Amino acid sequence: MQFDLSGLDILGLTLTALFGFLVGKLRRNRSADGKAAERDMQRAKAIIEEFEVIAAKLQQAVQQHQQQVVQFKDRVNAASQGRRNADWDDFSIEAERILKPTLALADQVARAYDQIKQQSNVLVNLQESRIDALTGVGNRRMFDQSLENHRALFNRYGKHFSLVIIDLDHFKQINDTYGHIHGDRALATVGSLLRELARETDVVARYGGEEFVILMPETPLAGACLFCDRIRREIDKKLDLTASIGVASTEDYTIADDLVNAADQALYQAKESGRNQVHLSDSQGCRLFESPESEESCDANQDPRDLELAVS
Image (cartoon, rainbow, N blue to C red):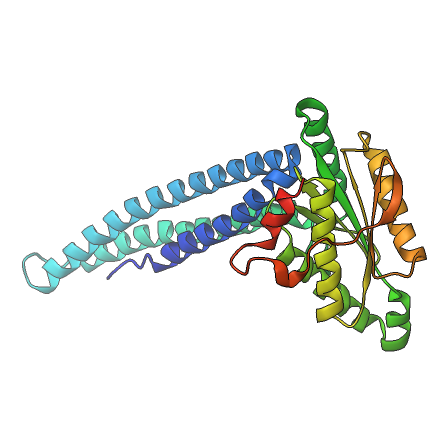
């Protein structure tokens, strides 16, 4: 008779993989979400501590039970080889005595799985509460939290950041002509493209409907505009639609509401001026951004996102 621990091994491997994946997502969002991400990380640490307690209890129970099984196996082997008299009544009583904790251990494992599932759902919800299910980028809640965090960093340490608002042009016509399923696919594709183009420290979120926002920490207005012009070209080239974009920075707007209103006003001007454009808003008002560099002039070995960050 052998006691199979493969189920517990699988349990441990599954738990480790799940926790690693979810905490990895939390860590990638840590710079973006600030205090909210820090709270989530502390919550995740508390949950893994609960996992460790469950695993320790299971391990102790398994070890005790395995010792009993090994001893019983030795007695049965000795009896079958004639080294001792076979007292089958005694064996039957002992087998029943071992069976009882076996059933209890199985029940304990089942309850442990239930606890792990519940706590894993908590970790998943920490992400889902700030992720837009359709596009895979942050939702409005994530954006609001990130904006507040960046505002606090700016007020305390003077860390400037730029705000980008992106609106897909004539999106209602896409829904009306091709249907909402096609429109949803378009939004999901745009979300994927924005995640691909943005830097790890940038915060990408769906602002509502067909609007997206990007917070770009420690990025000057000119660099943010250069990045937005590349976004505009990529959407125009890879997707069957265009986008209008408004950009503003804390270089000119030190109050969060003013910053959002400025970027929104720049977006409005981009729409009014013909769409598929990038407009910026600064102390001189709103105007069209004209890229000083073409895509071909960039070094093929240099990440364009670094060029945007370096623009001053």
